[in-house]
Length: 218
Image (cartoon, rainbow, N blue to C red; front, side, top):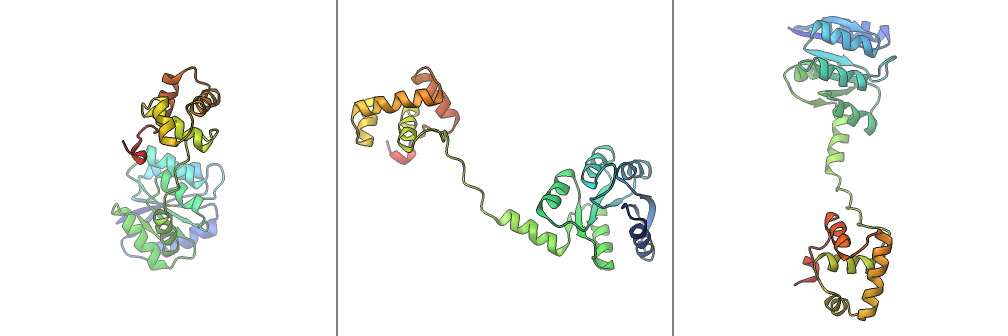
């Protein structure tokens, strides 16, 4: 028998879920809560297999309540059942420790299947939510920010070569500029980064991942 606590601030919704789940063999509702604090208390007191939780509730919202339940009663699997399908809500629930996420309006068999799945230690999402999760992880990672945006592109090139241990004469040859121009760029880099000398500039640059010099050859 899978033991369930229902947490929703609408008594009519809780009543409907209790009637629905009570008609399914192997499922038993052992408690109800009308706000987030009560949901945590019920989870800690009854230690159900599954806590079915709405997001929007008074006192303590479902996300924070899920975080508290995950901490205080880690054996309780939280299944979010909510009307919210935006990315912020979905991923906030996942970060808080929810094992599943369904939208209100899901069919009876879908809710029962999700309850059994999270009770068995699985993660489950409704079809619409699952598409959002897949799209999020399939999206390309954002490009890494350019280090030291206050520098010009040429100044970054000079700093990269400094960090790679190249002397001024070699930097001038590589970049096809005059040694005096290199010196001017270095002075500008020092001023913008607020460093006192070449050694401090090298430390800052290497901490930012510069100085590898692969793209410029040996």
